[in-house]
Length: 140
Image 1 (spheres, rainbow, N blue to C red):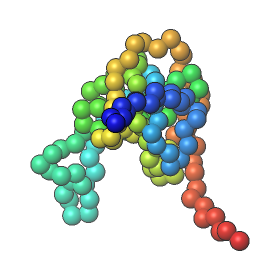
Image 2: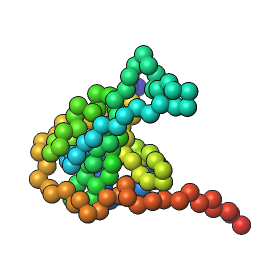
Image 3: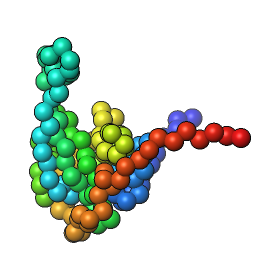
Image 4: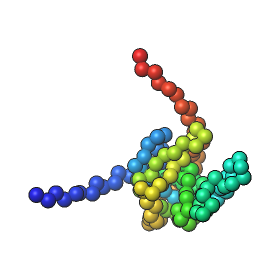
């Protein structure tokens, strides 16, 4: 008996629903701004990124009508991050950087151009400005 795998319909989330340490998010966002980030050299002067494959990284402010978050775009993802563009992020994850949330799409996810969104980005609720502290919970 052959079983047909049914694709689950993605559940779209809003920016303000994102939480630290979570992944598998699908969301539609508008790009507010994008700025390239230089590769950082480590102590012995070599670039921390493999020299054979220079990688481009940009920090992009993306958001929807509930808030904004910094999205870390890598390599060819950088080309899609034009201010005003509407994108669908599939299987996005939350990375933590210096105690704050960053949205990212790794090789298991996808970024797709979407129809222009008809929402205004709520820019006064930037989730990347919220600082989280790692707390160890001791079970009694």
